[in-house]
Length: 73
Ligand SMILES: [Zn+2]
Image 1 (cartoon, rainbow, N blue to C red):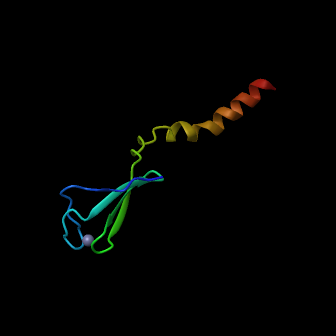
Image 2 (image 1 turned 135 degrees about the vertical axis):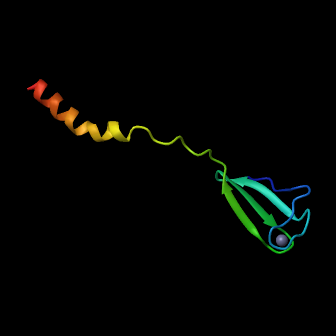
């Protein structure tokens, strides 16, 4: 279930109509729809993840695994 609300004062980027944009959230996205011209768009509501900092550590894993095997034998 998604509730569609008109955005007060919003102007359609396509037809420039005011107060004709409806907005609602669905599947993690913020959707907009212009009832005047049919314009729609959507953008993700999820926050961008932190940049990965484990790249170097991941690349070093094979060597570590070999050392562990030798120790166990
Ligand atoms: Zn429009």
